[in-house]
Amino acid sequence: MVAAAIRTIFAQPTPDMVRDQLGVIASMLGRQFPQVETMLHEAADDILAFAAFPPAHWKKIWSTNPLERLNKEIKRRTDVVGVFPNPEALLRLAGAVLVEAHDEWQVAERRYLSEGSMALITISGTDQQEVAQTELMTA
Image 1: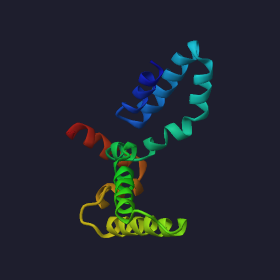
Image 2 (image 1 turned 120 degrees about the horizontal axis):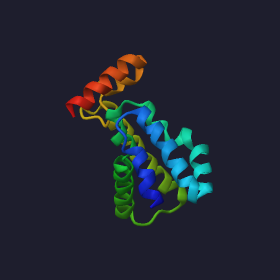
Image 3 (image 1 turned 90 degrees about the vertical axis):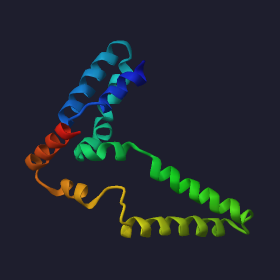
Image 4 (image 1 turned 60 degrees about the vertical axis):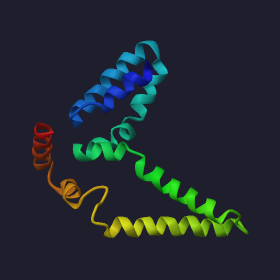
């Protein structure tokens, strides 16, 4: 029940509604679970950090897909090698996979967050709200 109520915070379409929903959920849960209300209020900055980004980025920020893919590739390569002579050898292999992924993300045509969507982060607040409203209407 608590997890389902907290998930409603992240289902809101605008940053203002996300903040309002956090307050509503915190007070609702506070009647039965005062510790949860305190925890939600103390962690509000961390919980609401994603709302500072354009709504188009939210699902990608929540997703762990890139991390899962990286971990899968590291696992695949360590399975190929089999036995490592020392911990440093494993660290070198994992580091090489991470460097390779970083390079790919820097120059690849298909980026996880496109340059156009990243430009939304640097525009002013009112322009960003207008873009967000347009995205909501066209979604």
